[in-house]
Length: 143
Image (cartoon, rainbow, N blue to C red):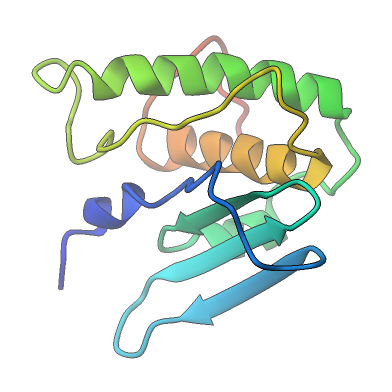
């Protein structure tokens, strides 16, 4: 079995153009693998989020607050903080586990990614911090 942290490198494939005309949520199980894939794509926004991490689908469905619980502004603010810290850790592999922080996330606070993309990023960051015992910033929401 490949190291599950290798797949964390693909957690958030933001800022990638997609070919969908509407929001698509797909959950795929790889044959012979325990990895979950969640993909959110929206052609009108021209961005997508791909999260591959065992257990995230289950966590998202069972423990995350429902959509529209938070405002989009709240999610954008938290995502900017979390992504900045994430990217700082990617650049310091001698200090932070490079198997956890393999690639930077290209998140531009001047772009409106829409609610669904921000919701997914935020919830992954909460899941990541709780599941891998990391603290990106401030109090980690427990769920």
